[in-house]
Image 1 (cartoon, rainbow, N blue to C red):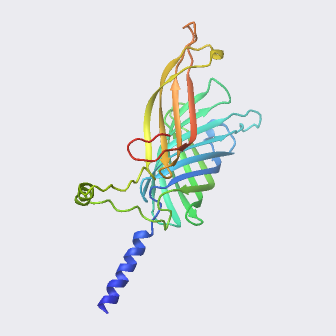
Image 2: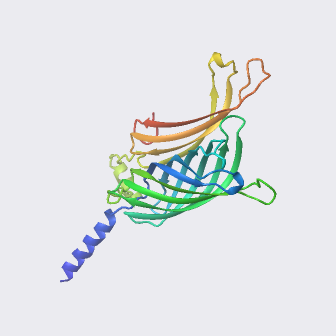
Image 3: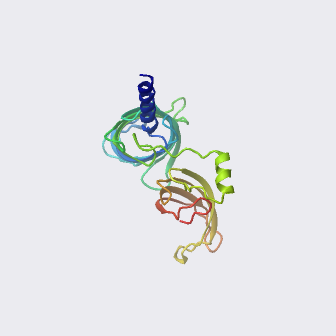
Length: 286
């Protein structure tokens, strides 16, 4: 009887060990939004679209960036504008596999207007939502969010906008609700014994890792622009789906001047890339 009890406990423990949640998964998704603008704007409520990229640091914490765009008209129905929002959020998840509730909060930069010069605004946001999973890697995501302006539009009035969104998310890599856990780390004494005997340690590469970085740039502009070559700076966020394939977004900015040295401009670039890596641990070409 004691043997059966021990076996039963071992089986339950084994199932728990391999029943991974969504930690270390990359989330990519698109969504539709519907925005209720603060009355101070004089705008009708409006539908729009957006996309998001997030990463589960663990089953309870995540980081996320998203962007959305809408084309509302004023309450008279005669004048339209374009509103784009880009947000960065810390996400707190409930854990679990098939229904993951969450709250989030962070910073938003919004751009108002259809052409330059734009009106730029700084906002903070908070939201609550739910991911309803269909299998391990696809989820319906529902969310409500509020945006609070950090600057008065008129004396004593900071606009407060509300959005509701619904969309699909695709989760890549990581545990994936039942995926196999990573191999346990080899103890130092064991590693030393393997190396002393002339053996080699298994190479894990950089699969399922999040990459965050900053960089400097130096750009040679096509002569048609009439601009001098110019240094700049940028940042990137990437995720290794496995040790050979990855996804990455990056943004950079520079302020070149024309070849006469009298007129300057600001150039910002944002990119999304599929990355093919050589594998390995200490020197990874891509």
